[in-house]
Image 1 (cartoon, each protein chain N blue to C red):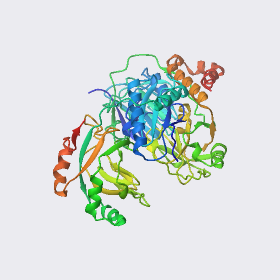
Image 2: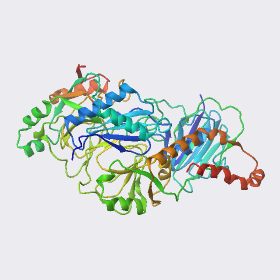
Image 3: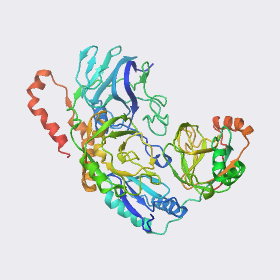
Image 4: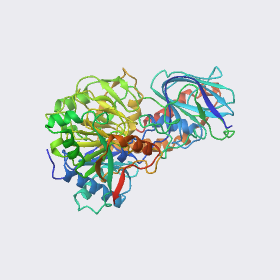
Length: 241
Length: 339
């Protein structure tokens, strides 16, 4: 089910969602991020925070300052406008150690698709992904742009704990995990980079709209990179923007 | 050394919360903050704090505290709990001075879940990303990123000013009242029968209830033909998501910020405290209202919190209080007038 015209969906008296569609789709994500940039430029009274996702933008508001229904209609009208140019997207090169203890599902994912593990790594590290949304837990970056040939539905039962820095795929999505958490996704590798570091400025490395490229990294380099990241040094590389 | 509150005994959940950590929803971090914002604001008001100062949130907890290195002006509001000052009963919903070396005992609440202990000047733990509220999953704020434990010492601000004790009428828990919701954002993904079940059948709070959300037991809510998986979108405090089990989960202060289950409705902001104060096993009924009514209620709640300071009264003697007892209902009626 797709909707050509965006829909205004109520989320109680403190938020509403502008939904562009029901699917993961690069064009929908681009429209979401464009509306997010437009709203940031307009600073409408009562708007507190916005949350872009793959297919929708949720706007949090103060119902004392703004009437939620009126504000919703105003933002919906902006959603149909031509987007204003947002900030130039940044590109991050993020080191990833694939397979083995770092990515325990690499072999199984390769076997499922009839590919060699090296081919899965090549396909996973080829694209420039876009951060479509950050959610679920602090800093969890959900990426758009996974090679469709790697898409794979989630595991039948989630694992109770997956480590911080896990690089995984689920369905058509690719993920950079920030902190240890349960997950039903397929674990391809791990990055020493901390995309969520409360003592660092900025606390969150990635922003919605950023581009991400994974750099296959030999396991021998893990210890040094991990130590650097623990010491607060950047191990991801900011290339553009 | 400045004054501290030494937690000498604690059972149940206790964490420091302030008005919440705003501005990070787009980075996956929910705001945290009090589960019952009205009781939290009342406790702060009683000790002369801004409504969003850091206070100790007690969840089905019993605690014993001793003032060390100085005195503390304290007040407890929220779930009705027995209070003793050096063994002598003292009322909640009033401020009082805990002198150095004196001990305060807060019993597990008789009903409801959350009570708030405020101290004049707040609890000056370091603010993390603009807030002192504990977000347990992210290990941010609170006391070094964690909940409070026996043996902890909570820092206190400068010695409290000499002032009269004040009181306010207890805040009703509204334990029998329906939980009001605005339908959506994904009510259209449910079978008509599922929507009827949601709004007409009783649910009960399950044992899986914490600051992230309350899972409810009860009848299954039927999804529509599209099933129960959606491409993740954002949640809000009060989102009622319905996973494959058909059993709803009401997402609350420390919730996940996005989720892949459809959300049939959203609890109105004014009623978040109503559901938060229900214990496992207690009944929940939902009632749909329109967005305009929900907005009016949100504004009335904001006015009520802003006006709390004007409702404070000096603490009177017991005899005077009893003489006035027939008048005490008036303020409670005023509280209900926001409905």
